[in-house]
Image (tube, rainbow, N blue to C red; front, side, top):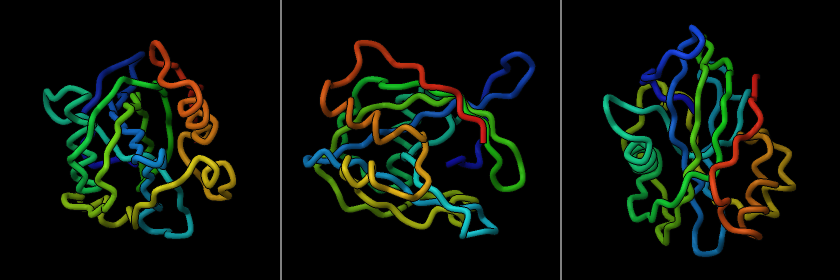
Length: 173
């Protein structure tokens, strides 16, 4: 889910937003996903991992922890390695977003969520959070990003984190 900040870098002439996302697992290996929708069309909805764009000179790790705290209120986490990297491009809130996303593994025992510092755009488009088991995610009929998240999570739980970040297929919506 895009936040309002659009910090990024130039790549082949395109503005690409640097994003840090969190694959947050609880003690039962459930993953936390946020539920969002197009600001003016609640029927156009999807689930996604917490995270957002880098602000100022912060590192991706700092952005991951800040975004997680702002979007979920969860601050008691152990941030692990980068699992996946993905380029994506999608329409949202009347513009096209081009992003370079890094997905960090994190673990927590804190499962209560409460958004504490959403941007105005996020307040109009983020409608909740839910912990999902891998099985629930595999059976979900809802749209989930990244689109292969159920399989990626299954492999993560079965095999552990990859030795180095895996580059996921580019997703263009």
